[in-house]
Length: 112
Image (tube, rainbow, N blue to C red; front, side, top):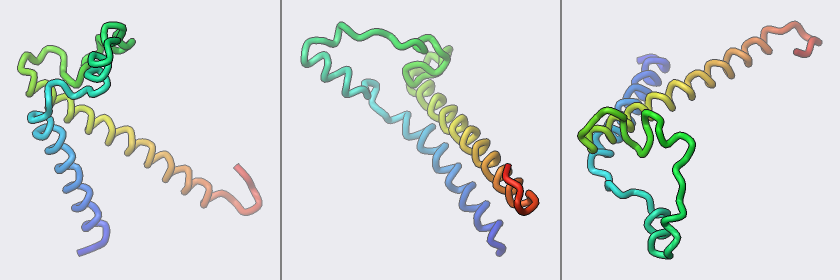
């Protein structure tokens, strides 16, 4: 087995595990996960909180807008979050690798 094939299998297994944890694990997560809000209520200043600027976004409050089942909505939000993170991280990785190759291919004595 080649090294690239082993690496690809490892990355695929990691991706599947991340999606499984995000999609299934979040199904069992607490519906009241924010300890900061809880402690603010306990200390008496919970009513001073304001919504964030992105409170109306499609993934606000760890849920997907338009999905009525709260647990399913949370699971979908987790899967979307994992996918978005992987796309962003993959894009940055490709840019960094490309830039490194471009520098290695540059003629000697020339700075870029």
